Length: 515
Image (tube, rainbow, N blue to C red; front, top):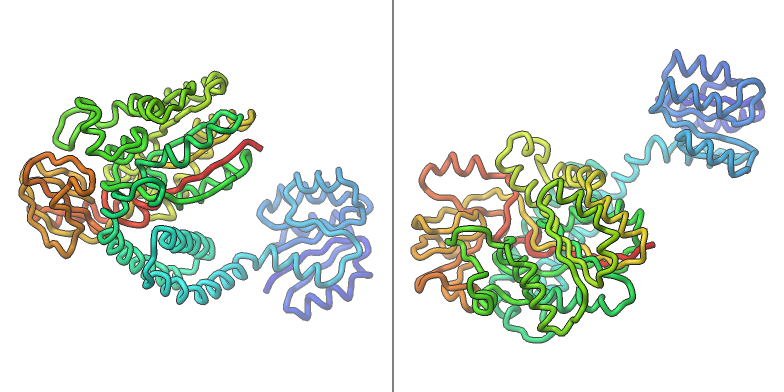
């Protein structure tokens, strides 16, 4: 039974309220002064405390302070006739659960109880019931003939319900959602297999926003405004990760737009990010910048010339603007970025590439400690949110928000938690990525992959005359028959990227402005 402590020097006048609550099944213990309230709170347990602000002797605020020191987790509702703002602010500053102005009616008291003690339960019930109503609607969308915009809607709704059901802690509905998510990814894999080459061949602005036209269609048009533009690319930022950090960012920024765009294949930094800054697809980059494009078999770094590609893109599009390019790969670089924000304000365009999230994803694969911290999607989001709130990146964004500026936050690709192994055989020059393979002599089941025997159709470099590219779909990952069980057990449930899934290919694109 829920136990309530109610302290008010006029408690006898509130007898009808007490009887009303007892009729609802609550146990109400009443006192008429602050001293007794403190004594009872010290030696007994209560689920919620109602406290009159203006009692003789010890004031309600002093009682609140002592009760919070004794039982910091018990919600306290302050009741007062005093509507002065400084009283409200002081009570709120001392972490009251609610603030009611006299005269109060029984319904107000009941609402305060339900809000503070039953909110999670009521929200859980509502979330579960609403998802049950939407389940069929989402299923019908998935089975329909969707275009990219349709798939964006499906993905947004799936992410929304994942977050809602996670907060509601409804494991039954969460399992149903997982099944629906798997169905959606299966259908999305078929869609990409059928439509991807056509999307790449679409000229002009008729096709979807993708990696190679992101700068031209989204970022550079923002330069027409008076404020400096900061394009912040957080490597490997999934849409649900954005949703986790969005409330933090909105403390300092207005959200002008939130969208998704489609990454190219393979969904890896080497291909997607180079394509973003060059404004070209990979095979065109290889042709236009001989010596600056590295294939999978080549030694050395594969993203060393992003600033060169960006400068060339601005020149080709006749954007004669002062710009900067900053890549952050370590803590010192992040601190230097924070210190340099005032200087960057003089540039019309500032590109910031922040590499932490992708590093975290790879660390989760290789480190048992990190894998335990980010066991599943919910834990991964929580870790991401905690990192961001305390990161130099957030410090840098807060500094930007102090001036009038436009901020575009996006990424190059996402990642998916892989579960099902797909057997493949290749020679020693075959790429090592778990979500795509490129090689001369690949053996696999064509029904299990998206294959490209003519990579030039997907604007991918042909490394050998007999090169074939294959991509894993849904939550599959490639595994070699040699030492198969060890390999599968090691990589199952890790976050990988390179292939075809909603989580990898539909990625956040957010436009913000300073408040």
